[in-house]
Amino acid sequence: MSRKCVLVADDDNLVLQQVDRFLTSRGYRVECADTGEPVIARLKDADKPSLLLLDLMMPRVSGLEILEEMERRKDRVPTVVLSGVDQVSTVVKAVRLGASDYLVKPIDEDHLERAVQNALDEPTPGEDPCVDFIGKEGEILSRSERMLRIKHVAAQVADTDVPVLILGESGVGKEVLARYIHSCSERRAQPFVKVNCAALPVDLLESELFGYERGAFTGAMRDRPGKFELAGKGTILLDEIGEMSPYLQAKLLHVLQDGEYMRLGGSKPAYAEARVLAATNQRLEEAVSQGKFREDLYFRLNVVRLEIIPLRERPEDIQPLSGYFFEKYRIKYQRPARSLPADAMAALERYSWPGNVRQLENVIKRFVILPDQDMAMADLVETPTSEPVASVTASATASTASSSLKKVSAEAAERVEKELVLRTLQEVNWNRKQAARELSISYKALLNKLRRWKIGAKTAATSS
Image 1 (spheres, rainbow, N blue to C red):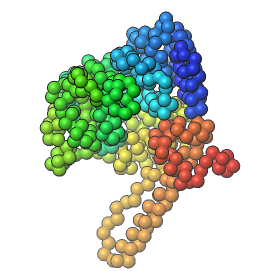
Image 2: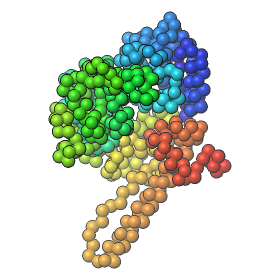
Image 3: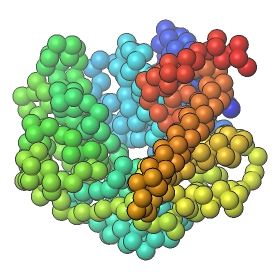
Image 4: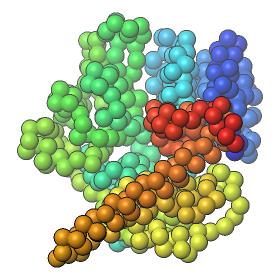
């Protein structure tokens, strides 16, 4: 599998050496440039880099000029900008020109790795982000009338400024729908900024949303803009809004009511111009009745409500979605052209998909990677619900059979998972963080699996 290419542009040779050494050790292919001209030339190649790390203050051709050139040509590459300590306003302009994140020099390598991973996980500008039910060039992949109605309403409200509350189970495509609303709106040329409200503790989430000023707390050595500031006149998605603390709910309500917020440590109000979308898999009405979610904030967010139905209630979408993901990963992993076998498709259509579209995508990805169809589809075995039986003996037998089937299914799934992990690790030369990204799991989860299986690079090498 070819390694992803990162183009690093900076006129500081020490920065180039640090980033080159670090990203190479993480399995990336790195190209370096110390001026802007070769960057612009490189971005015109048919085989563009996967990511651009771009210094804002290079001589002759600045980072901002490179971003403006990509904007004019409507041909962007995911970009993380590198800035000095006192360049907050320039960073904000860079994000509004399409940069997905920024890093302040001197570069912290943990921050660098996280920014690179996040940027590579974002949909590539120019590609349709709505893979759940919209294909390339607007092709409709959904055959569900209910989903098409949701899409129609989303398109109708896209150009309004009212908040939209997007509901649905995990994996149904709430972020996908949010990106579709943004792409259909007049704000489409402005940033789309996502904040996961469940991923950070209260104090970090507050600074993530609203930013902070130098000296606001221990370790705040410089000003940092928050996500509302970076979103500008674009769209901000508050994902997992049901996990937000009551304290931050009150601050968010103030933003929605008055359009104002205060940076941590700040003395002057800032103004929020971004359109707010919120998503959750929780039943907010129940959270309100239990006192866990502010009623006034709920009514502010619930101006337009879109609830995405689970995949099991739209089985007609399994075939087009499977075909889309199959072709996507066949190309990504450079597999020979073929199609999903009829018996594999039948198995996909019989399954109930508790993990929704995300689970379907992962199964198709595994099917593309693994040569053994039975192994790839092993976790689609479901225990059928038994009919009530009169005899205690029959009931016990059914229980034992059910237990045995669950055990066999679990063991088969474990074998498939182990083989997929090993194959992926081998393809990325045992770069565990890159493997975790390819497998769509957290780095910690991958380490736990390897410990459970007692697998290390040396163990795998001796056993192969």
